[in-house]
Image (cartoon, rainbow over all chains, first blue to last red; front, side, top):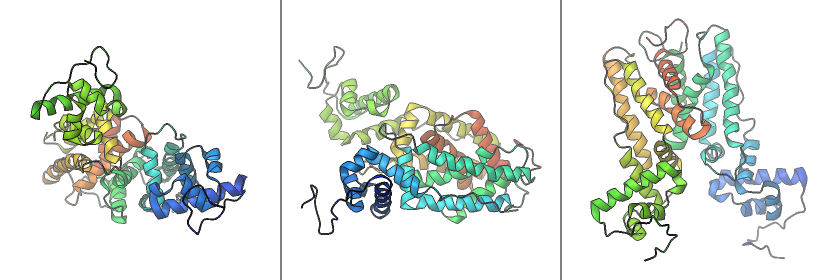
Amino acid sequence: MTAPEDSPASVVPPLRRRGEPMRRAVLSAAVELLSREGLAGATVAAVARAAGVHETSVYRRWRTRENLILDALTSELDSALPIPDTGRVREDLLAFFDRLARLLGTPQGHALLRLSVERDDTLDDRRGPYWRDRLDRAVVMVRRGVERGELAPGTDPGLLVEAVSGPLFVRALLSRAPLDEALVTGLVDLALDGARPGRPAGS
Amino acid sequence: MTAPEDSPASVVPPLRRRGEPMRRAVLSAAVELLSREGLAGATVAAVARAAGVHETSVYRRWRTRENLILDALTSELDSALPIPDTGRVREDLLAFFDRLARLLGTPQGHALLRLSVERDDTLDDRRGPYWRDRLDRAVVMVRRGVERGELAPGTDPGLLVEAVSGPLFVRALLSRAPLDEALVTGLVDLALDGARPGRPAGS
């Protein structure tokens, strides 16, 4: 038996996997290929081969390569950004945004961000929501800081989250400058303390 | 005489424009098409038709559609972001970032930003530098604020510029949330004054 596409010795004959087992096998193969070879390497043919399923089954379920990749990445990254609750707003923000910076530095996080900014009518409307949901949840850290009196009552929680996350997204997408802990600390302290003189940073 | 592509009554026969006049006609037609029809409408064929030059002349000079568009946008937007010098750091920052926000809201600015984040090996390495140059120049506003004692001596000028510009880029690319004056004011005041209590905003 020969596969229709190029068939190295390692090719596993497609199985008659269906439903949830098929879905899990395909998504996990997609994540694995994305991590190893990036967006370009994660073709539907390659993912189907690696998962041991028919390419047509993949198309039947996900319709397009982009939908498959988004499903794979959002499933994979679903639990990647927990909201800390240390009792101190600065610690919470540092922990959360440090994880966000590290996520954007991984091949999976970077691929999801790139797909999120690509305008493509074949994509389900699932990209925006992934990041919006996570940043919306981050807002509770700021609200708790306001409730504890650590932050001014008039603080706009969404704006503070945007001010710290924005530069991280821009470095990942545009400038390709490093996403390190010093950057996160600098951004959090700027948002908390501002650049005016006479206030100790990191308080 | 018939053009090889679809030829409406308004088609101007290609001229034998060369050198700088040809370049200017093509770039101005590209900017005009980008503004009216967006990235998708600015094909090489449409630009050449609108400029009244041969399509082959365009390819000979710019090689790819993307290079042409980048050249058009960076020429058009070259003087779009002057650095103000009012003597007050808050006024300077508000004026500069308000112009940046408005630029990102125009079809041309938005198109240039989209092209800037697309990874494409056929593009000259000219996208990153456009935004980096402008943000690098913005750093002088912060330095002057430090010199005047309006900002703390330890202020990181690049970080402050990133903290205000980052959310503007992210709104333009990712969330599509509005880029208005209230946003710019909120971001500038957060970067200057921080979110800690007890400090009057907008001072």
